[in-house]
Every structure is written in structure tokens, then in C-alpha cells.
Image 1 (cartoon, rainbow, N blue to C red):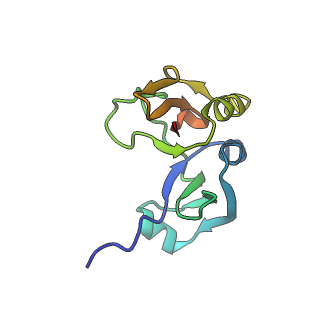
Image 2: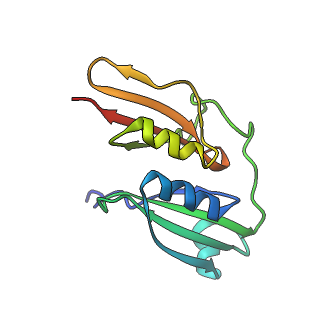
Image 3: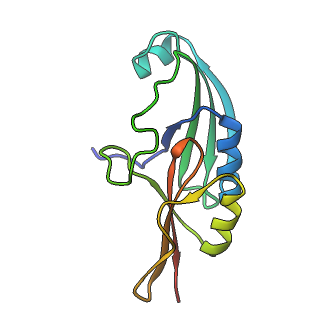
Length: 146
């Protein structure tokens, strides 16, 4: 048997509302919010006393989702270093295809996003960049040319 699809990518954040605003500005849609707690949650994630709020974000085409989670208990654990470079082992980044990369970067900057490098062009195919958003989340953007 094979998998059916990739359902979502989960990202733990401290400021859920700021993260929602950032991804809405990027063009994602808030699908819904929920409070998560109980024995089933503890068993699923392997922690005791889980109490969290989640927000499910959906891409406009409906095919991809991000689950943003704010843990109230147990307390969150900070990653070290706080803003790891792009070559750090583990989850690297989330990439989105965009229509106008300059416009998207300008709008995300209003939400505190910073370019990690610069806007670069790959041949005559793409303009690309990495931005660091809320909670240090690295988001890659790609605008197809032509």
C-alpha cells in the first residue's frame, strides 16, 4: 500500500495570530482553528498534558496545508540556535510558488519577514529567495518566468 497524499506540514509557533497573519498575507486561507487536548493528544504526540491551539492554513488551490500550533502545555522548547542557517539538519523550509515575488516580499516585510540572502534568478526560468518569517520559519518563494 502507498500513501494517499501528504496532508499537512506542522509548525510550532509562540504567537499564533502573528503566524496566521503572515501566511494569510502570503495568500493562504485560514481553514479553521481548534483547541487540542486530552489523552488522545498526549498519546499521539508522546507528551503528557498537551493543551494547544491550532490553525489550519490552506493554499488557494486546496492541495497543500500548514498546521500552525501554539502549545500552552507542556511549555515549548526552543531550538538552538534560534535562527538556524538553511543548511541545518532537519526540516529545512517550506516553498511556495508565487505570481509576483517582489510584491510578496514587500507585503511579508510588513509582517517582519527578512530576506536571508537576496532575490536571485536561475537562468531564464525562476526568480527565487528565502525569507525568515515569524518564529524563524524559513519560507522559500519561487516566481516562474516566461
